[in-house]
Length: 299
Image: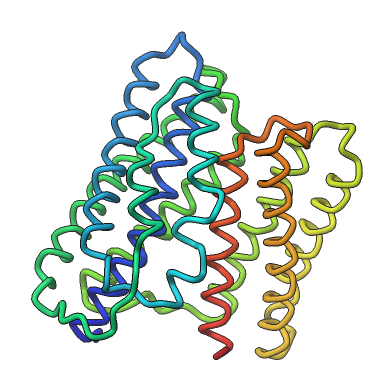
């Protein structure tokens, strides 16, 4: 069982990361649905705003509570997040609450902070996140079914909608476990393969969304996709420390590639259909995975 302080800190760190990820998934849906389905655009916007509200609440509780390692990981926000949000809002005309990002950039850790009495408030926050998350999962599954049946057109890969739903279900599993005072029980390969699969799919999405003329960037993305696929196949066969080392090395390389892509997109130096916020979004996911890997590896 988690101690009260662990439950509060871990809950806030998980929510800080995933609430932003979820609201951005919904932003991408909102901006890529066609005008012929205004009800679905409105539903995506409403769910996005719901996660923005929860994220704003989480930020208030998190200041002084979350760990220094979590803040330094750049998994909640990066140096590029605010610029990417502003760029995407300007280019799409769809709003994002940048005030939350500004507040997150000011988050600090305070080991002496006594926050044991916040247990009930954080438990309630998790519960609200659970309920909204279930609505978002059902919405995304409904959209994917309709897209596969050619009843709607959405300018996102079908695989990306499925990918987003898998991340949401992973978050859901963590929240349910936290509400029972524990963390999900997974084998090493289950955890690594989940994230290595996501990193590989990120590489495939980047490859597919780059302009055909960006041959070098596309080759690099394809190489990363192949690397993460190989890591999944090797997990059971390899020694624990070796697969961890290989996963860290591959993810660090992909993270650096994503940093270069994010900065290049923000400077309009890369030809693609990748929104700057999507590049920053997948960068944060790599940063989050790297923190998980280092915690497992003990570094």
